[in-house]
Image (cartoon, rainbow, N blue to C red):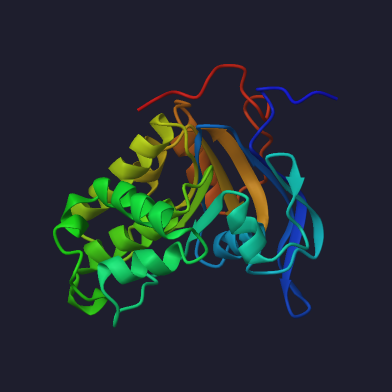
Length: 259
């Protein structure tokens, strides 16, 4: 069967992931299209971070499949998955605080040839002039917002086709949250797909084409972010309402909107 442009870049089907014998996510299915931003919402403990970790290879997939650009990811290491073009920005500004901005970015591209690695670092820094101006500062000298920018820039050094971003707003001021989300929106407009976990509902919806909601490890809502009824549906999902079917086919026929 030939590959169609309508096929998603990422297709997760009936995924189950466990910590020990406890299934944290169970039977989850979702997809992300090419050059599309999808946001993943849900209460604390719903399994959002676990789902991202399973997709990126940081946690084994117990059951189900994760297909990225036609390649099954289940059973592959995080390093292999990264090399396929999927980057994961982990929650909590995970950078090396005793290393400089430049060194953090060099480490992100550790397996690249020298000249290409330097070119990709400069490319990543173009998205964040604040970091470019502080390229020789240690991570510990950066503000929380700058640390988050550096964490995203580390992912961009990989030139990912898909960027998983876990709660970039955590601990940031509204201005810095907007700054980071604006970069993600620009990345999508230029062809990078984004799967975003976020707690700030309005900002997450503004940055996304579609939204999924997880509750108790299962998808309880799937909708267009622009759907007029999406906020009421979100309230129902957050308050423990019955799971609702998608409002539209899993892959909308129209092209993702640019922002």
